[in-house]
Every structure is written in structure tokens, then in C-alpha cells.
Length: 382
Image 1 (spheres, rainbow, N blue to C red):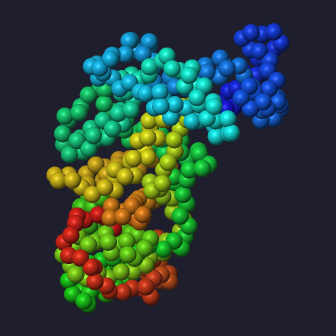
Image 2 (spheres, rainbow, N blue to C red):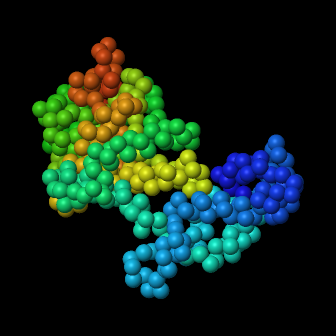
Image 3 (cartoon, rainbow, N blue to C red):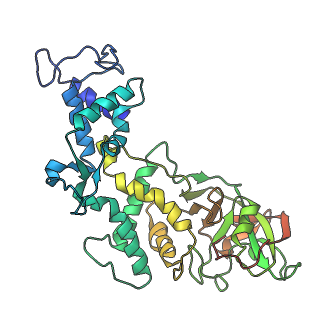
């Protein structure tokens, strides 16, 4: 029995009584022959009760052909009918990984063999966030082509985004808002035309662009100053290879205080449909897993950064949990990481200068390097 069904099975065991056909008192498991230990890990329920829990979990995402109506032979009504292998792939959390897992999976398959399954609500829950994000992007660009009561509004999408991040915060195994300690080092580069830069390198000159010079970027529009950096010099250089400038001056900044970041680099929460407390977030989690890839991808033709800029301005900056920036995968290489920190030029300075800079440049790390490529891509916010 899978971990997520264990506590629900224990609740059933508490109702067990001798000669009770609905809640029989069992003393061993018919699959592994383990003796029941009411105070320990080994509990046993009847096969009918176990399958009731399995079907209850599956009903979170699916309905049977009998519930939906007789399934078509040719799929002509647009529904996607799943094979038994597909259905069983969702039962992993109900089965567990013990030595009897294969036999248990086979018996579940035999029990469900007469049922034909399809996504609940014609699969709308599956695509709710997908359509909501498409509407959000269209709305950000001045279009109302997806304006419908069925599609999440931009405001509701941001509310749901905050909700699922808040849920993840309460999961011990997922640190989506890690504390980045003071002293964390980040590289930043500034392209220029000549081997010798036209500026004297300093925290102000290499840090966040002043508002008057801040250009349209992945998370910030013209005139909004934010700090874009990378944890490796090579990554920072990769991110500016779109520039027509052949050189760049690089420097390593250090954070001077602890920061809270929204980490979208490794969100892999798969809520169990057999845990009622988690199942309600199944599709939200599916969306947030892909959201990190969505915000880092290169722009397509006729796209701009307005949607991701809006996520920051109307979403992240207004979350009830204060967030200082985002950690995300590089569009150049998903194995490399970038950061956008929500601090402007006035919060950049030099290490040891005694000012109140949040991001302090270590002047000993400053060097001028060839970028390595001229005009080979789109700006990517580093």
C-alpha cells in the first residue's frame, strides 16, 4: 500500500470489528503476509475497501465511461480515453514500491479492466492554467481575444500563482523561497565597444542600470532598474552575446544581507491524487513546474517581455510574502542559473565602502573580456 493511502487505511481499521462485513477485522496482509500491528506500520483493509480508495483517488482527475456516457469507438466526441497502462501510471502513489508492488499493480489492473476512463470535466482542469496564461499574455499585449468567464482572468491567475507558491512554502521538501545568505556572490557584465571601457568600473557603473538608462528586459520595462546577474562568469557572458559590442567588463558582487528569492529552477512537486489535501493542487503544481521554463524561454517572433514584466510588477512585488528576486534557468543553457534582484542602481555600491549597498562590487574581481560573439541572439536579461 502506498504511503498516501496508509493513514486513510488506518482510519478504516479503527472501524473494524469481528463479524463486521463492511469493516472486517484482518490480522495479516494477503499480498505480503505481514502481520497487522495496529500501533505500527502494518495495517490491513479488505480488497474492496482498498479499491474504493483507489477509485476515489482516480476520480480526482478522471471519470469512467459509465459516468461520462458510453465511450465512443472512434473518439468522435473529442474526449481522450485512456489506456489501462495510462490509468495505472497514476496509481503509483497507491501501490508503493514494496516487493509486492508488481502483483498489486496487476490486480488493480484486473479490477479496473471493465472501466474506461477519461479526464474529468472533459479535461478542462488540465488546460485551465494553460488558457489562463495565454489570456494573461494576450491581455498584457492589449488583446482581449480570450476574454471569457471560463478562462482565468489575469488577476485570478496571479492570485492562484501566489496560492500554489504559498502551498509549496509549507512543504518541507520544497524550498521555493530559499534564504540566500549575505555574502552570496553574483557576476554581472557590461558590454562596451573598445578594449578599455569608457567608464571607471565601480558598483554603480557595473550594477543595476540607473532608471534613465534602464532598457526593456525580461522582468523590467524601460525605466525600471533591477539587478540581473549570474552565479558564474561564463553564464553572465553568455547572456550578453546578443550585443554588437565585442568587449565586456565583468565584476563579482556580494549580497550584504540575507535575501528571499523565488526559486523556479527545480520545482518538481507532483501532488498525490490519493491525498485529498494535495489532490486539489494537482494542476496548479503542473503549471508551476512548467512556469519556470516558460519565463526563461527565448522570445518568439512578434513577442515581447510584457507578460513576465507584469508577473513581477502586479504579482511577485505584491505577494504577501516579501520576495527580493527570482532565480531562473538560463535561456542559453538550462544547466546554468540567472538571477533578477529587485534592487535598483541606488542599492549597488563597492565592497568595504561603508555605504548601505545591498549589492557590493568586489573591485579585485573586475576584468575586461571579449564577449565571444557579436549579435547572435536576443537580450536575455543578465
